[in-house]
Structures are given as structure tokens and as C-alpha cells.
Length: 562
Ligand code: AMP
Picture 1 (cartoon, helix red, strand yellow):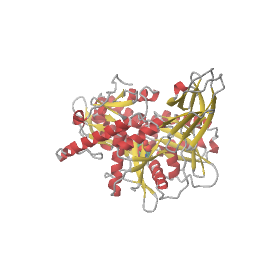
Picture 2: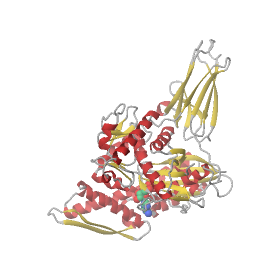
Picture 3: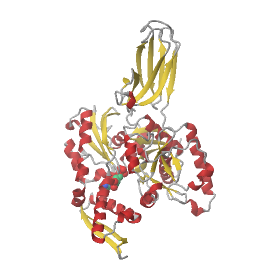
Picture 4: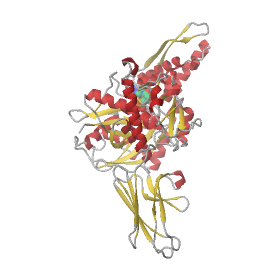
């Protein structure tokens, strides 16, 4: 069996780790020495796919065909609130697939977020294979704790498209806690907080750890807050300065904006440890007389802090809300673990300390800690590590519809998997011939706001007055989140069952079609002269040939932005 790698498939960046010879998790570097790969995918006009840093550099010059944040779309419907918000913001088109899923349209072609994530996973897989010198086919992939079954399954499907068997989906805060060794320290139940401030999102998770069992007590955050907001503030200030001095609006010059964004981010990163940083951008643009604008500025940490105070203020309310949801006082949290590159920022750490009344733990590298935890978990799964058992839990409530739209809970969220729940029903009308039971998942009291998982119908019920026929419903969810439901009439034992596998939106046939198409594209690219398929990390693919290669059932509706 090949070894199992651990992958942090992030909104902004992704990272891969494995257990080293001594059984310690370690992240792997790409050929350029970087240990995180931007989760960006770009399609050039000439049809080449670029992934990672190369794709990100095209974010300004080729904005409509450069996709970031596909994780915000995976397994989601286009009309979900935060998807609509992202669609308004994103410079690429987000469209509705025939089933209402959020897809992306690039050069007129509809592409599922699963396929986009697969490009990133393939790049990550290649980093692992080049670094290990062996083929890699199995992975543990992390997802946010609040991902529902559809989002988790869509992530698995992305793995399959990338040629990876996703042996387990792991919650990101659980992965972080594992990497920090939080499961080993001490006896008894401990409460920890995982504070994750990445490039585009902020997540706070409160968890309890006991005997190697992680339970997510509450999650919260702000899906529109991350390190990029800090960069943008500095960028906007410099755009204003250049305008005031030269009467030139550089926002209309993509190349200048791309360079400015990179310079601002680098300065911010440097200032998390240094006192001063220099932003130097020679030949940024030409002024009104055609003379070059050579921009240069020395800034200190206070300069950025002054521009971003309101961003810091947005960190506290989600933490307070999560504490309230988990019915915890801040001092009951024993340890706060930092995750996400932006958690390195000293002012962010000061906010964490103020909220929880203790210094956050800084033992691990916040950019890599989730991938390290995934690798540690991979070690446990493959038997290379005899660490504590780690049990998965259900991320959301599962239950049935009663009456018009009320929800009756059967399996509460955070139930340890596998789980089994029973409930007895009686007929409500005379000579009722069948019962139809609809299953829902979510965290609400009204099923119209929840995700319908499926339905089981038991017919040919024996005749009798209302309440005389009793039906037992049994729900089982296994460790792979596969849900089985059986409804059984108790007098004669007639029963009906369904097995509900989580669906990520793509059918198995569609996934196989994508894999076959990708194979054809790769073969076609390989038959081109060598220079034509050079794309850096991910392997060259010519999308201009797609039309010859694809017949897609039902083209997603391009009715404008979501
Ligand atoms: P992640 O999504 O965890 O990879 O985090 C990426 C974000 O962290 C980006 O906005 C980076 O600019 C930011 N970041 C990375 N390193 C640092 C650092 N040393 N100081 C401040 N921000 C950082």
C-alpha cells in the first residue's frame, strides 16, 4: 500500500505533509522551495492551465479566467447567501449548474468547483510525489468543521478527479489540535480553542478533547475576513497617494496592481517580526507626461495597524458568540491554538490574548499546522503511529420532517460515528396505507432552511384506526457518513430501507467523464511540441481543445452572476 499523505486544501493556500522516517509529520516543499501552494487556478487565452503561484500572478492581468476561493463554492448551491456575496465580488463568473450548484464559467466553458479543486489537489499530489520519489494515491484531506455532507463529499470527489483516494475527511480544527499534540497532554476533558485566521476567512472552533476524542462544541467566524483585507488596506492607501502625487489612477493598470498587491503582502509579512519594511516599486506606471513613477516608501507596523483597526475589531464578536453557543466562559478554555498565516500578526495575537485571557500557543507553524495534523492522522490510519484513537462526529443535526415543515431531531450534531437512532411512529389517519419519511440535515427547527437528504416510503400498511399501526424508524450513520434508514411496520414486519450516500453534486458518471476528459487532454497536450504544455506546477492542459473532447450533458445556465 502506498503511504497516505495529509492535505490542507485551503481557501487561499494548500499544503501537504507526510510522516518522516522518525514518524514525525513534516510538510513538503514544491520545486520553488515553497511549502504552501496558492489555491488558485488560471486558464490562459491560449488555453493553458496554471496552478499555484503562477495562477495567482495572473489574478490581475487575467482576472476573469483566474479562479480563487473555489472552496467557497464546493458542494454549494448558487443561491446560498454567502455564495451570492462571493459571486458579486469575484472577478470571474459564477453560474448555476442544472442542479443549482455553484459552478464557474471560464472562456465560455462551465467548470465545477470539484474540477478546480482537483487541479489544486493534483498540484499538491505532484509536490508529494516529486519530494517522496514515489507514486501517491491516498490522502487525508481537511475541511472546515462546519462543512456539511455535500461539501465533504464534493471534496472527496475532487480527490477522485485528481486521482486520489480520500481515505478520510478530517476537520481542520481537529487536525490543528492533533498537530499541537493537544490530544496527548494530560488526562480528562480539556477545552481548547482553534483560532484560524487565513488569507480570506476567519474561523473559530471550540473543542473538547478527551481520550483522543475530539468534539466540536461550537464554530463561528467571518467568511469575509482574512489577511488579504490587511493587504488591501495598504494597497488602497498607496493607490490614493500615487493619485494625489501624479494624478494617475493605477487601479486601471493590472500589472501595477498585481505588483502592488504582492509588495504590500510582503511588507505586512515582514512587519509581523521586523520594525520596518520597505515597499519599493520602480517603474510602477507612467505619469501624465510619460515619465516613470518609481514608488518607494518605508513603513512600520503602526502604519498598518492604523489602517486596519476595524478589521481587528471584527475578530472578537464571533469568538464571544462561539463561547456563548458552547456555554463556556473564556477562562474555561485551557489553550488557544493559532492557525492561518495572518494569526502571526502581533495585534491579532494581542486580541486573542484579550478575549481568552491567556497567551495563545505558538509552538507550531500556523501555515502548516493543519497539513501536519492531517499527516499525523494519516499515520494513525495507516498504523504507522499508535496514537490515540480519533473519532469522527456528525457535523450537523439529522432528523425528519414532521407536520408541514417542523424538524424532529434524531441524531444530534457531534454524535460520534458510527451512530444509530430509533424512533417509533403511529399512523395519524384511519386506514392509512403508507408513511413517507423525509430526512433532513442542518441546524435549524424549520426544514425549509435545511438540506434534504432523502426519503423512505413504507406502503401496504395494514388497515386500522388512527394510531393503531406502529412504524419503527432506524437511522444509522457509519464512519464514512453513509446514512442508512429503515422503516419497519411492527405487527407484520414489513420494511423499506434506503441508503443515502452523501452527494457532492456530481454523479459518479460525471466524475468518470471528467477523469476521462482530463486523460484525453493530457494525452493531447503531451502530443504537442514540448514548450506548449509548460505550466509550472500542474501539468499543461489545453482548454482550447476541450470543445473537441467534451460532450457535456446540460450546460449550466449563464443567467448572469448568482
Ligand atoms: P493561510 O490561508 O493560512 O495560508 O494564510 C495566508 C494569509 O496569511 C495571507 O494573507 C498571508 O499574507 C498571511 N501571512 C502569512 N505569513 C504572515 C506573516 N508572517 N505575518 C502576517 N501575515 C502573514
